[in-house]
Image (cartoon, rainbow over all chains, first blue to last red; front, side):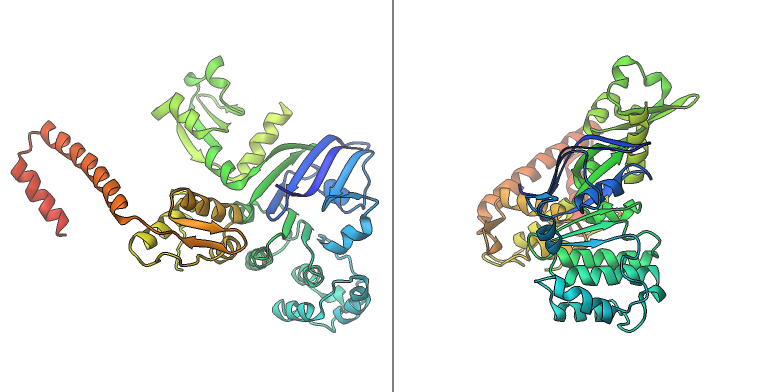
Length: 287
Length: 123
């Protein structure tokens, strides 16, 4: 299957944080959710995709083209929605559109006006007076108006109310109806991803801990609860991470069926949420 | 095409889609050659991921309920109703054997079992 983003052995060192030999392949035509705790390195990776940061070693490819050489072509084909206002705050949408439109050969004025209307955005109000949700919508309207094949978003739903988040997810799905489009976005609101995202990437301390289809994760990973007496060296090997209390344990396992075969009725198995998954994977990683 | 997905159901979403489309084909609501919505359109309409929808379509294709024409989409396949009936009958037979075994365990006479079945069937 074709990949829209590829990282090959990418390393980037900071004073307190490091990405070491990271490999990542994001599939074309799907929504991929990028999750992990604060400081996991999500924004760093997104910045490298956008060529805002450059890796020390290794290659970054977008649409099969290499950064930074192909930056101009890549930028014209993708839309970037950042968690901060990237526009000149004192300008209004009309002025911004006049400035941005000529820079995209594929700019579609009709589509832009359509989204401005759908998102109920005022054309003549300075961006600095927009709410957070309106700013996100404005970025999105611009990204969608040059027919971006790939939308990259760094926490587009951060600080937004639930109703707006649901609206945004519906817009993403509308975007995805067109064959060949891809969305890659980081978020802390994992409940949005459980339904809509095709793939999940879990990042911690600059390392990818898991990259799999959402369906597969939610069907196979389980939280297991039981008595400490069930744990010995053999049974422990079936868990990714175990938390023991005085008499009982709870643990993460990656194969529901295997656990059911081994422990049967002696344990309680619960479907996992992505939040719990991050928690357990992170704990296992730190051990 | 009406499909309703329950988020609180224990049944995986792809299975819910599979079963509902299968039922529509078996009851004749969807006839041979009827085009199904595209995977992406259905994903959007049901507010679920593309992969989930794709999986349901793939399973339906494997089971012979639909076929795919690249570039055109998915269509309802011709159904051999006598084969499907045959399969269903075999399943019913197996289930009845379980019922009989259970009845014998508690010494339930045939007449009583028959009366119970009649009552439930006509409910």
